[in-house]
Amino acid sequence: EKLRMAVESYKFEFEGKAIPVTISSGVAQVNIGKETGEQCVSRADAGLYFSKASGRNRVSIHDGTTPKVNDVMPADVKA
Image (cartoon, rainbow, N blue to C red; front, side):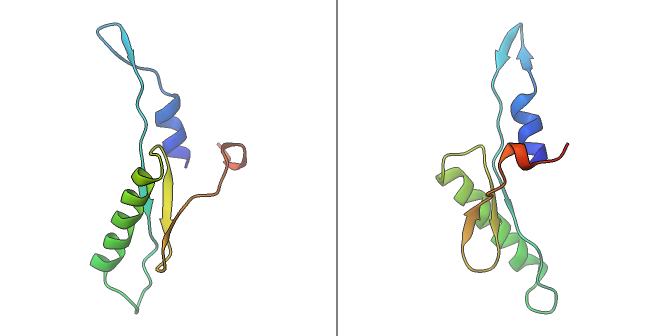
């Protein structure tokens, strides 16, 4: 969430024109002994596509069941 907020607030410019930039991401924690690294990356990828389908500029967490949008609000994120 910190990275998403930093990218969103950064003032990107090209040839004197402001360019709005945001990111979407998917996050998954590997379940050691229960899945391979490839399976974990696949869940993170599913989280990314969930973020994009949910409106973009989001972080989604895939816990092994279904992806969900990160419910941390910007005020809750510590710098």
